[in-house]
Image (cartoon, rainbow, N blue to C red; front, side, top):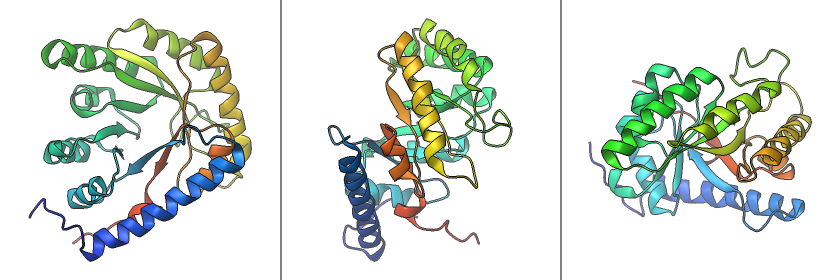
Length: 245
């Protein structure tokens, strides 16, 4: 299998069109919300899609990609090391995977418990010493559901200050802000408004933790309306998951 991705092949043209359409949606939503400067950062979520597609996206100017499974992400990051991409880990993360994630990820968007903070701090600290890596950006994942994140991960809002303190105490981590996934089967606006409130309280204590990672293909407009700084877009750019077999 080759890494090469011809700029004019059919898949590249498809991705270019999809990417342009999403960027136009982002620009319109940002203009409507008065959040145009700067525009939210686009993270293309590439899970299940081949490295060749990511190389095509890099050729189209994409700089940030997201993955939610460590084994897949680690392999792609190694294969595409020459592309200059910034890797974001956006899925629920087991503490035992922290060491691996700290080798390639610039940011983890799913920090939702003290044990994970401790594991990431240890792993990122080791990478700082051995490879000189920058501090690992940490987004506290907040559950916006009544089940305290049983299904989709996330800490309850009341636990955010404790997690923030633990992240801020580590020289190997950087408190970036908050992240959330809108609850299934409900309008996203109330959830993202709630997240904006959680963010405001965090920023009152940690003025640099201004990032809000929110918004996917189906709800990016609502996320931008309530201050999203990072968008995690997958299917609207890459299309449906490739068939297996």
